[in-house]
Length: 260
Image (tube, rainbow, N blue to C red; front, side, top):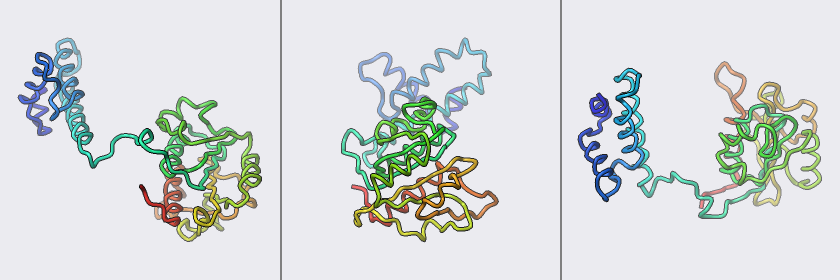
């Protein structure tokens, strides 16, 4: 049954069987056409199927789907022009005069995703405030699941209140522009704003608010500009973890940043 399901995915079951036998009985190792993980998944299924109480067809289909994915992943990893691994150990990360403030963000998974975005966009620092989960506080375990190590790469600080974070920025980065992301009647489309930084000797701070209540309205007067993404559907906004990379990459585009 497993071989039948493998054939559905275009996998030569007999050839895979020979590769599995070769890896187990000879010193040639794992066939590079399939890779270690796919062969091990195939062998594990066969060794456990006799005691598995699950429907044999369902189990075979699930294993075949997993083997298909692992074979494709193995092929992708072998291609030199497909970058599947982190490069942090190979080069010094670029950093730009770009910061993120997270104003009482609730979801640790959102925070983790934003840390990954901050790393990808070369942000110099992430400032978390209030109830926002952070790498050295409550919620750090969940944060790590979506940050995947980025929380250790991007510098960060936590403040009791968002006001404390803005005061810190005004005191230490007085030439940075505070950009709030919120849907209001005064908001500008994110592509219609000029973001100072890089060549001008200035910088930009992007402020993101709580998933339900948004950026604290009491902070609006301290922001230099408020931007929003155009929405063409029925929902008022995107999740903040989806909004952040859109605006950050627009900032980098305006600054003429190019990957090395």
